[in-house]
Image (tube, one colour):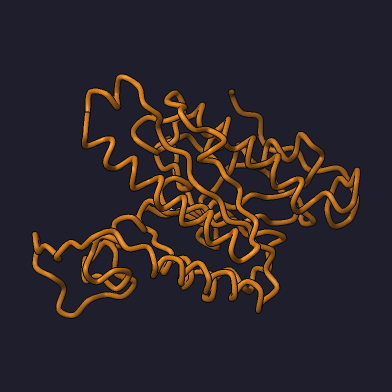
Length: 267
């Protein structure tokens, strides 16, 4: 298994790209990152292949990183994404926002894994921050800031919920623990949908589309190779309609030439 990043810090696909290819950037946490899947078969890679089968020459850049919160994404957009001027930006996150919603410090928790800044002094190993009842109000504010930032800089934006494992033998064996965590995942996805509905934002609802599926994951929410293929193709279908439908029959989004073929991979 190979895990590489490109010059801009995005996870490499191993595909060849032409200078005229448009960029779609997908930002998120470990669900997007797909660290334990093979290069060329991660979620973003499968999405790119599906777009190219539609005649759309686009490079889908994987901006996933384990432990990423919505505050991290806001910082990333301002510091890194704005000057890249992608054709589309997709925000697919929420798993780690569950953790911060249960911490007394929220997005500014002193937990070294969650805090957007290095704490001085760092909390001692094993330090436990008080837990609170789940509160997603600050997450809504973060999504608002992300949306407003993208509007201000002219970045086409879509949000997405994340799919997670349905009830099967794996879930049943873990009992109430699994059900409690699953309820929290549904809550954070509902928060994404609610924000998008109130703000008039595009929401690609992967949770509802793949509700009940257990065969797409190797644990509770991380995709296996089949999950990356199936959900990557579904994401491509939505992105094609949202961002590439205005010029019917277009091949290369910039110069009209045929899209470059990515390296062949095994299904």
